[in-house]
Amino acid sequence: MSPSEPRFIWLEESEEKGLVRSALQGNRQAFLALADHYLKPVYRLAYSLTRDRDAAAGIAREAFGRAWFGLQGMPEGKRFFPWVLHLARNLSVAHARRHAGEALAIADVAADASAEERADVAVEQATREALRALRPDEQTALALRIVERLPHEQIGALLDQPTVIALARLSSARGYLLQRVNSAIEKSEGVA
Amino acid sequence: MIHVTLPQLCAYLDGELAEASAELVRRHLSECLECTERFARLEAQDEILIRILADDPEEEFFRYLSASIPLGQPTSAERPAPAAREKPVPSHAGHRTEDQRRNRPSPRAAWIAVAICCIVAGSAAWVAFRPKEAEPVAKPTAAEPQNAAPETTPRVEMEPPPEQPPDPLAEQQHDPTEAPTQEMASASEPETAPEATSAPTPDVAAVSATPDEATKQPKPERLVERATQNVVPVRTVITETIVESEAQHAAPVPAAPPAPRPSTAPDPVALALRDAKSASLEAARSKLPASFDKSAEAWERALPLLENAPEALAGGRRELAQSRFQAWAAEPTPARREAAIASARRYLLYAPPGPDRDQAWTWLGRLKH
Figure 1 (cartoon, each protein chain N blue to C red):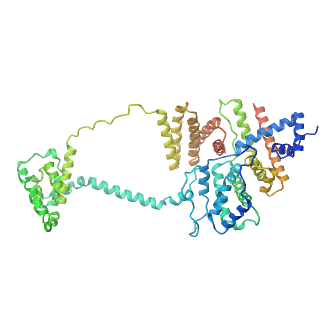
Figure 2: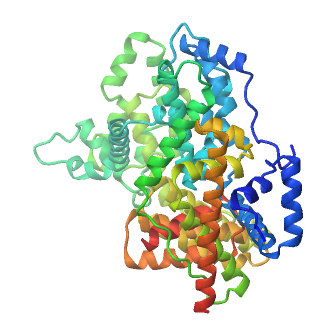
Figure 3: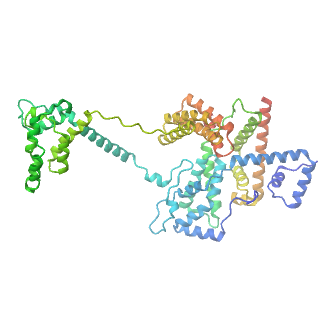
């Protein structure tokens, strides 16, 4: 797989529909086949939105659990993956809101750290803090692009929005991060 | 000069532009230093974002995750799940599977098990110390008949062998050639066997008839012979076995030869690592703040020894930071907070990018909050 190719492959639509139909009749194995196929991207999205491995695992688990018990409520004609991804996204956003008070501290590195190490830590810290300020759709679009390497068209489809909106989310998120990080670097250089 | 917009740069960066548009952007970037720098910053930012946002656990983690999806109880009509799903996979991120939760004993069962253990231990202790406790009761009083076997027999048991001089009369009364013959004769008749177990035999009565005679010490060799012939009443066997045991206690026991020692000294690094890991395991099991403190102290002792093992050193720093943080999380105190912040900073200074580093950032954030 080249660095520009998407990291996951969609199930064939007919196969996915068959599995969903079977799962609706109570076939646990059919649902587990769906879950096995889409578990990794769901987990990766949850991780990129929470940056917490334990929380992401719990969110992925809960998203598929809810999908199993709420499969009857899946919109007619909609694919399974966007639906379960939406569940995971909502759970991740709720988790992030619950932990919004746990703001990242200003990282002060050890006294013997080099200037380069200090700069790296400062940039990483600024990026993490800026990520928390992004809107959920922007974070999701960024995660789907950066982590899953999805094309804009698929990002739009997963966000239930046109492709141009997906591009707008991505560019606004990147621009905001760039601005915040630059200002943080300038600030740290001014202090130094 | 008309610069390239941010959405155009993003689309170009993601390879989403049509070839004609991409060519225009490429041409502009070759001419405009400002847009080139902006584009470079966007590229560098994507690299940082990959480090922050991406996490790729191993397959085992996803197998565990898949097996722990809560789907409720399977119905009988359903096909049984594959064995891989039923088998609980070791937790990667500290979660327990549903099966592990179900198999976990309830607190009530644990208390019952503890109570049973206490009862068993108490019984064993009572049995072990019963002769010493029975000693005052066994002393004959004036009102008691001298030849009462149940009271005099324990007295025989409690007499220490070195204080008992050999008595030729007793030796004659307990002729090793006679007693086994009589007992064998009684044992050969089934009707008499119950009497032998319920009442003292003449042999036992002779031993315990009077206090003087009761102090006579039978020879262990004879007792062993009786026991092997399997004709002595049960009570007698117990009594004489105890006597033999006490004689063994009283006799000087030759010191056992010292166990052979390994020729090479144990590796201090391996020992320190082992201690630290066991302390971590214990802390993870008990989840007590003091256990986490102990674990952190063990890792602090081990870290100076790991200077020549970079991987173990990195893991040790992380374990130290984790133990300090968990101790603080379990029971927050200012001292624990300071120690946790220091260890998290120390870990972050050297930690490579990845989920572990992200986790440390999370710890630091909570500690500073």
